Length: 441
Image 1 (cartoon, rainbow, N blue to C red):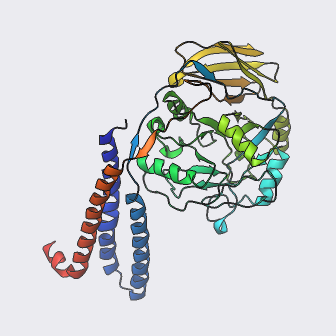
Image 2: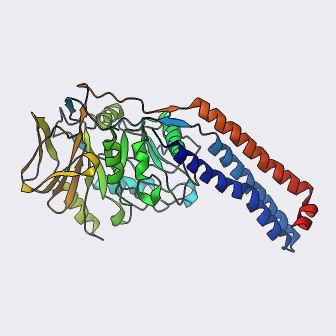
Image 3: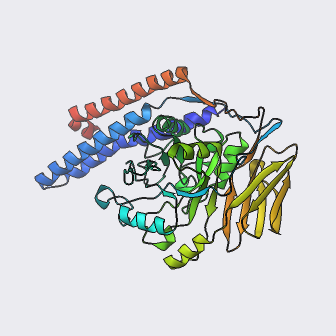
């Protein structure tokens, strides 16, 4: 179970932030405004402060409306049956996908102002991507929606400093609410739950970047299938292994997260290979749900000319085999040589390493809960495979891990009501009796 004292520590941390912003910041600003002699400027600043205060109040309501959750950690994968997500894989059906790149939006205010939709088309088509999804901030970009394989995406989150963001794949509608200043575990889970009602996959993005997601969060968070482990802004293997080690069947994705496709150092760096014949979105969703995919870290030279990158991209090998034969996991690629192989298990522990082989082997042990494979190919290209996992049944069943604690939520909301009421009371008292309070100070 999630540590209750930690939950309330997080709550009071957030509450103190808003207490300062809602009560003391306006007071400080009002003192500053009194020193401004220009009456028109004072009026403008007062109006802007009122708008800021209204926005802060709206966000305060968003924060306080989050319910309290009870978390049940599934525990390590266990059982007599191994689930291999690559069972039935066709090595001729790999498709190259990128679900995370930004275009020019909001008059160029957001990061992505140099990436026009036409430039994105030109660059990713030239690099032979089968699909590239434009994931603008808080906006579903419909560019290319006439294509049969179109998958609507967007990046959710207003946060600028601690980016607790998500990529919503197969999005039907944007969920406009967010918690941009600081987020507790409940807020992160609530956001995942709400976005999950409006899209096919909620994928925590660049989890290690700016500390938006703590590694410890992944022990408890659930109701998501994909994790953006590979992102040039930061790799999230610790987060992934924490989720897997606690029984969450989470699969890998890799994306460029490009903001300027004209910069060759931002494109073609990380992507996801998905095993589908027909690229109809429902087939892609099914493959992602079952784990029939792997992440690629493509390792081009810094400032490599674009055409050279295109040539090297066309020479990249692909996965041809990931099969569990008896108790032996066998992995092969279309390359004649795998320079390095690491089989990784519970807690991110390296179970076995091999070097300079054509075929990699690992004999699963009775105490193995999951096994995932990392491959380094010639020219330092890396493949990261989804894990084989133990289960009690032949077909994996994901148990519910989180639920709303209605009693605790009611108590918290009553406490919130008193807190907000007290802040409003102090503000009104300050407005009605400014001279008295100044004299007392």
